[in-house]
Length: 249
Image 1 (cartoon, rainbow, N blue to C red):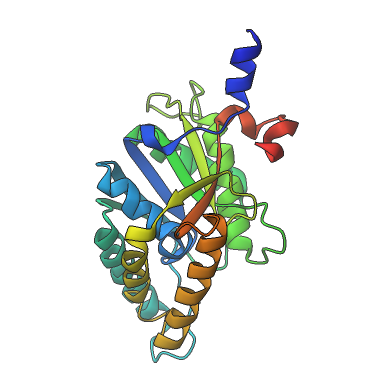
Image 2 (cartoon, rainbow, N blue to C red):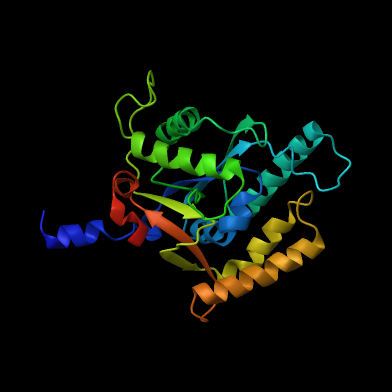
């Protein structure tokens, strides 16, 4: 390996090469809020987009008359409508109860099995290393995603699997404070907002207006004032294990 190889190793993977991706969300609205513009961007490029929702979102009740079971069923409908609106084609549900996630290795194995079955090239999840993140579901899902990413290429992971190994070209973390990849979503920003609005049990007009202003301001900052950007921390799987330089990539 020469210096050029090492320099390439220290660069993030690019989204231009994505053909089939999995967007992993702890709750039924995280993909739209965290990377909705990027989902629409990838769909426009012809990328096949799948969603995995890990919990049922049953606790996300800010005043609706729904019971937890009713809310979970309603949120599933909202999530699929919103995902399809952005261009997602296929939806997977693990149906863990909202707020109960704790077993990272078990969840990693389940995510790894899905990655192997569908043979994705890139996966996305919330950044579990976001400072001050206090929702344990987000932390567990992000960590489990990272563990699945570095393990799904192994011959017998998870143990007893009959699915073939899968070598990912990249992992993208949204809700990140350390983006290294900024996508111009100016042309898809209104679509992101409309997709968020489809989560009617979660996002009322007042919150939607707040989100629109916030993501416009953040997007302008990310793009250097040249439009509206949406950021990801993109890493190769090799960056996710015993690789101190990952924080600087």
